[in-house]
Structures are given as C-alpha cells and as structure tokens.
Image 1 (cartoon, rainbow, N blue to C red):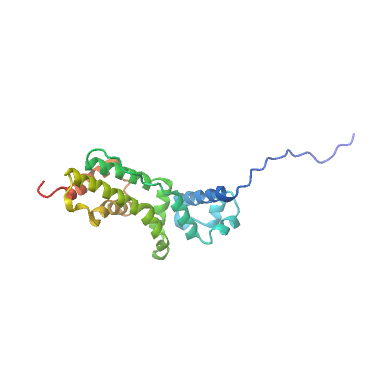
Image 2: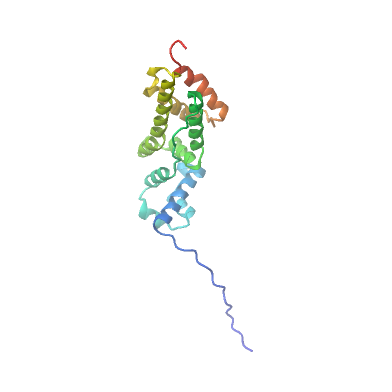
Length: 207
C-alpha cells in the first residue's frame, strides 16, 4: 500500500484579532508594563508592540511618538484619588489621604510615572506636565484643601492654614523623598511626616 509522505497537521485555533478599544487598551497596558520594568529610556515602540502582541504598525497608526503614547497610557492608567473619609480628626484624615497617595505612587502606573519624571530631560518632561498636574497634583491638593478646611471648622487647624504653601507641603515632600532619598513611605514614615511637619504647621496659634 502506498502512503503519502505528507502528514496532516492539526488545525490550530487562531486567537481572535483585536480591534478598536480592546487593542488600544492592550497597547496602553503594554506601555505601562514597559515603563515599570525597563523605564522611560528602555521603552521603545517595538517593545510595546511585542508586549501587546500586535504589530508595530498598529501602534504607530494610533500614536506617532513615544511621548504621545506614554502620555495617554499614564492618563488612562493612573489611580484616581477619591474623597478622603472623615475619620473625626485632622491627623487621621491626613494619614488616610497620604496612605492612598503612597499606594498610588507604588502601583504599576505610579512606578511608570516616576520613571518618566526621573529619566526624562526637561523638554520631554514638559509633554507630561499636564498629565502629572491634572492626574496627581491637582486631585491631591483638592483633597488636602478639604481636610484642612474641615479641620478649621472643628477648631483643630488655624484659620489661615488654607493656603497654597500648606497644600503643596505633602505632595512636595513625598515626591522629593521618593526621588532624592528613595524613600518608600512606609506607615511609620507617613506618621512622622504628619506629626513632625504637618500638625505643627496646622496647629492654631497659641495651642
């Protein structure tokens, strides 16, 4: 009996082709993953395409530059700081807010954002100013304003403490210590910052 030299190859099930929003989400997720592992300098459009399991052309059709892709990935992925709970005292409210900010900083999008801040040159960093301010700084200041205003109403905070310098103190300190001192902001660090910096800054005159 004559047998054929060809052997049947089992049919392979092709994965469904992703399009539209599903593919865009995969590309944005891949960009965040690359930023959090290889950083801004190591990220390439080719790496992102490979991570998203798509072709490089699919990435370039949507984003013509690395900066535009990263800006959209950060904007889509950054955790949102929600309303801080009212725990009955300014110290507890500030600690709750700082813990949420700390957790956001060390989430995958937060690590990606810090790689951008740390590695970009000034011209590149300018592209991300709006993303950082609107996604991180502005929400944090808004919630700090709420906590301080609430504390004024309870008599825990002096009436002139609701100002920009006070609202900048926590974000500036957390960013500075994270970048310059590689602080990971454990609970003890946060408590010391609140107790040694913020509470004396907020305390009513003569208290």
